[in-house]
Image 1 (cartoon, rainbow, N blue to C red):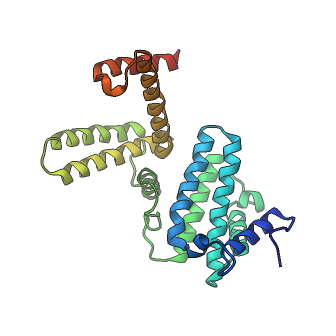
Image 2: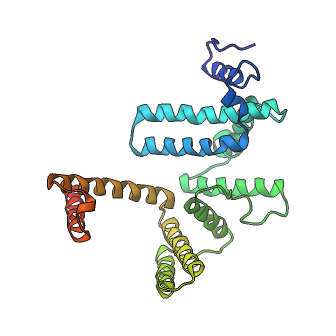
Image 3: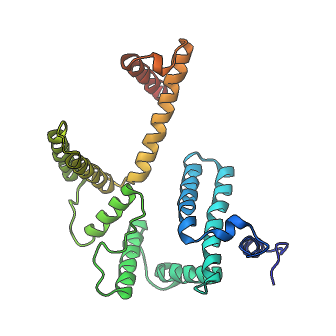
Length: 267
């Protein structure tokens, strides 16, 4: 039996996880967890990996990848305890899937470029979904737990494969202009649900423009968030030089400082 002192890092990690989940000798918190309680941590760790990549922090990336791997090991251990599958089965299934979805690497099929590979990958995935459920719809299987922007993009890509698409970012942009007008028509209305619906339509349309322009909406908004934080932080620093805080300033002053921060970044 593998012990926590086993020289194989992967085997040692699996042994550590088994010990943490031991009913009498493990960690009470780890023992109490289930798939549902651990799922939010799994999502959180995936975002922390993305954050480390965004910051180009290789030390943090190494650590966050480990934390994400631990989430996989945790779920696999709970599944093993319930008699469903174990980590070895997860790894074996993954290897089989990668071989199956890369016939140009592990078989004789030729793929001319990355674009053709992406198209072939999506086609194979669609065939696999159909094999699992012959009556599955085009949009079936897009996880509802995805962040809304990511899910919107996935839904649009699925619909695009059967021809339900603008096909051009500029045409999709015209839809954005239409949705902006509809939002404007509802502003000031007491019908909050109507405003929410129109804003949702606007966001969905913007995602469509990004997708057709080759831009990932989730990544784009994450970078916009980071830019806002950075520039607002500069506003705070400039106000501090004047002996003030944002609460002691006003919109006109802060807007001018925003322009200064923006200019500094572009200099």
